[in-house]
Image 1 (tube, one colour):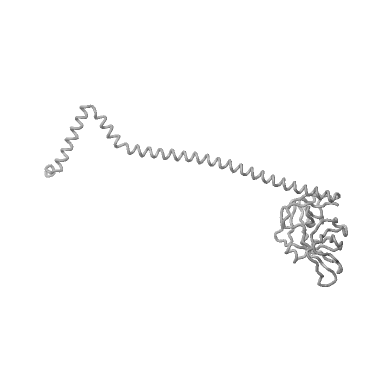
Image 2 (cartoon, rainbow, N blue to C red):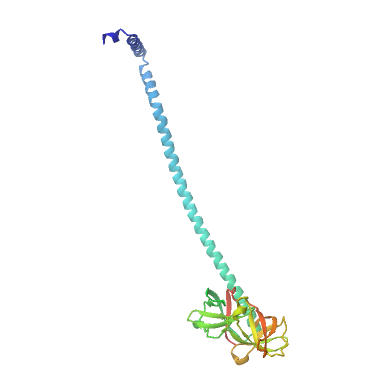
Length: 275
């Protein structure tokens, strides 16, 4: 220990302490001690103040961002509500447009067939398993619809009612082999029977059968319904003759017919309840 007091290090420490003591005495005498202390405190506290300021600023910015996020969320919610309202309005406009077109078609058909009593209906479902595009409509017995009622559009005949519920009905289309209606080729006036055909249905076509072997039905003729048997009204357009062939039996001819209406695409129809 005695050796330490003799070392150069001890002498340096002693000089430093003496200088500090002298500095403090001078500062006390001149009244600047508080200023020195203040500077010392300021020197020590400045880094902490900087950190505190940065933390405070970060939290302030964080809460500002939260407030902005809330505002943006509320604005986004309001915009989504407006979008839903506009979508609803567009849906209503589309529905009104469709209804107006349906009623306009009904009026035109009514002018052509003043004795028809009709009910407008919309397609609400399709049978995905049906090869002949049968579909369901939103009108039924409560609206006076009955089995075998013809189903039409302004363009022509679509099919017949094959099932009826209180508020719905099922339509069998003219592509279905179960569909049968008396028909006439307009130019030749040759009578026959339009029946669905399994093979032709895959091509969206049907068949005019039981034409006389001497029939002069030609490609391009229109095929219209006849009132043969009194089951369906006459003069409903069914389609156009594409070709005429002799049956394999050789007893009669048949014509391949392109329907005037594609049953796979109709969205609204008219049901003829009386005529």
